[in-house]
Image 1 (cartoon, rainbow, N blue to C red):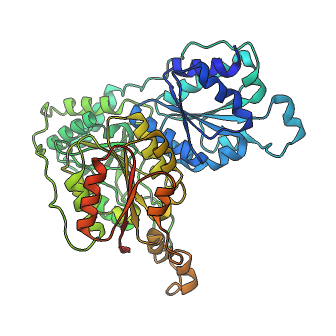
Image 2 (cartoon, rainbow, N blue to C red):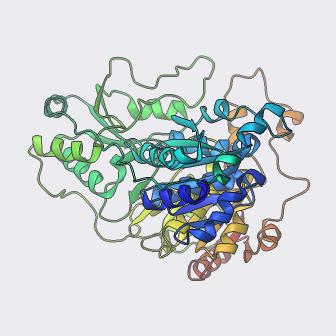
Image 3 (cartoon, one colour):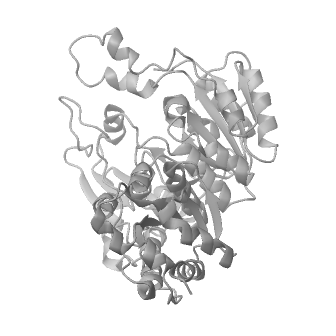
Length: 520
């Protein structure tokens, strides 16, 4: 058995049965092995950043990793931004990077590079397989590392001769590390903090934002009066009627400081202590208020859902929260001008039950969370690492992971252009993805930042031109159609609502280009 065949069989036996790829010459034996392992689904992407982002989206919904296959160091470089996002979101990804044959490296061929150094930027585990006989064992360990608590990007470097060599033997799956149970004395300590009568913020992230842990967090809130908050850009958050809606920490540091003002205790639950996204002249980077004590109920390596349940029980909270709205409440269908607010109302009015929302709407999506808080139950995926170009690939991977659910990609125009090739994969795979493309012809968030970084005087026309997407105006309807995705354009609230309703009911991918004014 060739190494590549043993590799694929090992991956599938370990639960990794989908591989997003943009392969090259060094990976041809992996590609050929797909015909010998029909349980592995190969999904082709036209750009490596689509493949890595799709693997991220797949894992967030499936709860287990996909593999991604990249071509040598340059291919890894092209996929790096969305691997960064996966790392920041603690998403499990098995990242396989093909390389030259071991004996060919010495010749410094055109595509030769230091793959390990590049991979360590986004991977906690990097290994170069050195033999065909050991390849499957390396793969089994990569899957275990990726799936462990917390989720990680594990990079396996696959030399071509290791892949094509004979003598491969499939390996037995390796059990991943289970989340560590939080010690009872820590639960008791946090319970005492919450019972102190002082102002406490319960700050959730990661695995604490599933439906069950959210309900346990609400039990804690109702028993103690704590303020329930969540990270700015959660990896995967369950939302909708019958679930609490944590206040998400604001993106702008000055607003986040206002949200946390007066807090005497900050309790982290699978989350990071809040810091400003960027440094600004004269403003602190650490957003924890002076005099506030930070506690950690559960680290990313620990069982955050179990810790919240134990904490609620230790506080004597009722078994079921009583202060939740269980009925679905939707906004009215909007009319008139097409704005960020009217689009949010339309989305809230039409969002299907069980939908998956991939949110990279940036500034234009400001009103969407409020308009959908009491919609039917759905899952919300965010831009975890701040590297734009994630929204369309994540939507693609999520749709592969959940073929029975409608995926709604809320996508800004500027960041869409980083990975617009995702649309082709959606069309090829006939994925149920509806993309709402907010076209304000501007890097609107950067226009806002330009005025916040302490410049001397008003930015001039040459600076502003670098953040403007006019001249020529881009036609996203034509782009989508060129990739095989049916598309329409909306310029009024009525048009958008009608087009969205039709798109959500249409099998396969669709795109709506919404012409909206910048809000900043």
